[in-house]
Amino acid sequence: MSDFIVLNGQITAAEDAHISAFDAGFLHGAGLFETIRVLRGTALNLTDHLERLTESGRCLGMNIELDREITNGWISDLLELNNLSDARIRITVTRGDTRHGADDALTSVVSAVPFEPYAPALYEKGMAVIVSQYAQNPLGPLTGHKTTSYMDRLMALREARAVHAGEALWFTSADKILAEACVSNVFVVAADGTIATPPSAFPVPVSSSGTDNGNGFTPRLALPGITRKHILRLCAVNNIPAVEKIMTIHDVLSAREIFLTNAIMGVMPVTFIERHAVADQKPGPLTLRLGTLYNAFIQEQSHGQAQ
Image (cartoon, rainbow, N blue to C red; front, side, top):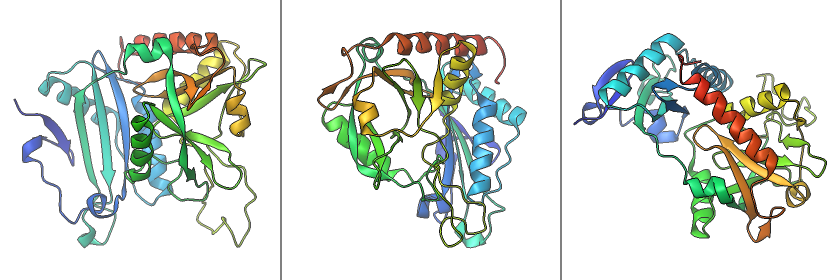
């Protein structure tokens, strides 16, 4: 049976899909993407993902306008054609064929593959992470956007997995400020029980000769994750103290709990940072509570339509 995708708005068998050898995504990594979890046929947080894709496109000079209802229809068609109920959807948009010399003919691909969850043992015992040898650059134009220029993250993930870790934490070079992990956001629970996550915007002075070049560029520290957004919202409605905060390696090593979030993993406990044990080497109570709250939130979504 063929796998089906949506290429530039048209459903086609994957083996029949053709993208130009001159496509900017292929040649330059000039593109953006979103990974969306589908649970029982519902694309979770679809509106959030499309809004982030559009906003990143605006920041990076790509006019991306994907209608939610049309996109949801494509996803429904792909689920039916590929015989899927629980899936991982990827929406990829590139600058298109470089020979055209304009961004008005973007390439878009929507694909669906079976959902493959993280191992249950990781949620029970926690994940080990490493500290990446590479540095986050808040002044980089791609920082804080989900771009297809992903080689550095893949390199760090490969190094993590070589030592049986599941993720790598990224810090800035100059001040060693915590930013995020390769494919997830980071939350730290301090000794007083307050949950903190690095801010998406980087609070640095902007000078006329520096980062403010007239194009509205804002330094960024971390991807504004969709799951991250809903974890902060769940904290607010459940009276759990949570803040966006600049943190260093000291905050990480002194944490009572640490967890990671993304659309596929949900809430993932971290119990080791390399050889350093986080607290008592077990998923903490706040991590477990938020994991339960988030799972309840997505289960509720899956009984309705894409949000």
